[in-house]
Image (cartoon, rainbow, N blue to C red; front, side, top):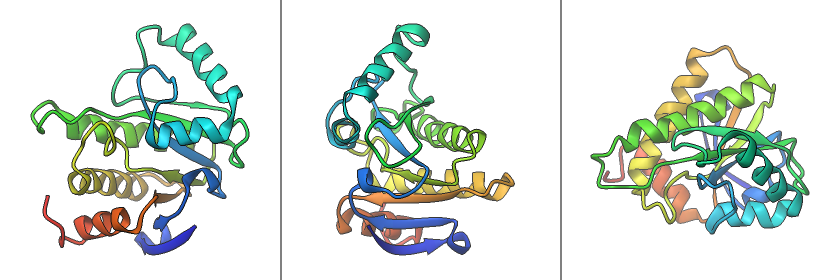
Length: 186
């Protein structure tokens, strides 16, 4: 994993690599409400973690969220075969043009993920770009919400968390950095 840039005195890290190879405490999964393992990062995490993760997600869904984990919510599971302590499954919104409360729901997914990490004392947490894949959230807009939410949480809570934003491509990392530095259109 290659570190590209850091912010907030190293408490926010932007990196390029495979999130399933993250060497930290937890990985945040851009999950679907069924917690079923889909495509993109969700599918990659489920594939790398193995069947134990899917079984735990199914049990959690049937016992706690038979209608599916609501958008904007997050829940933690074990990590299966991954080298982290746990996976935080965060359900981001489907982009509907920006008029369906998407920013608030996306921020909530990040906030809940951080609250779970803090409660479990997970200090190094890797985030993908939640909702920017098949859910269609524009990457630069999502970057602004993600960075604002995570940085505000870290500044307003006395938590020792280091948040990693891990992107599969350098182009996606550049979009994130450009958005938060004000050099990419939103």
